[in-house]
Image (tube, rainbow, N blue to C red; front, side):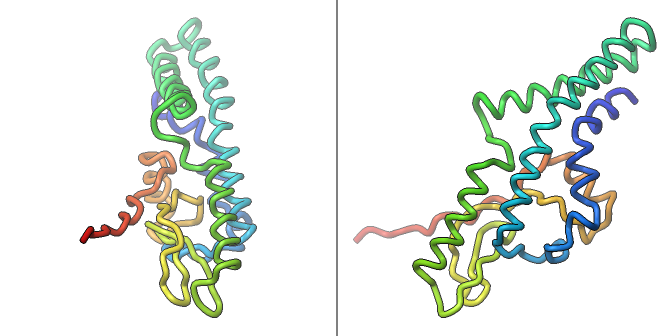
Length: 188
């Protein structure tokens, strides 16, 4: 019980707030690609804030775990302590080395760069970049504009609230698919 609360507690803003109806008005339903827009850039930055907010919530859960270890149920407190410590360590790892956070300022800048590039050097008459599971493509001509896999954006999922919550807990927001591979260039 403590381990479950310690695992879910720090992730509550990402799990709960982003799935609210008011938070998703400007986006298409779940499986559809998301158009690149200022709203998408804002969403990526919000998700980044929620991701790093888990430090604060994990510290709160650690305090409750320590109090439970000292004055309450040792089993419950140990579960809180271990699970929230795991969250803190995974966040620190993404700061120091290893896989970066699924949502970052660099990702938001990259999305805006793709939009700017598609306007300056259009791939077709009316480019309309959308972010699919494995890449950013032009929805008009199908040109791949960026090979960037899409992390979870907090939209209400088509497979239901419970399945979406479990998927987010398992992946911690990282993309479910690998980015498109780079095309192979053969030498003559």
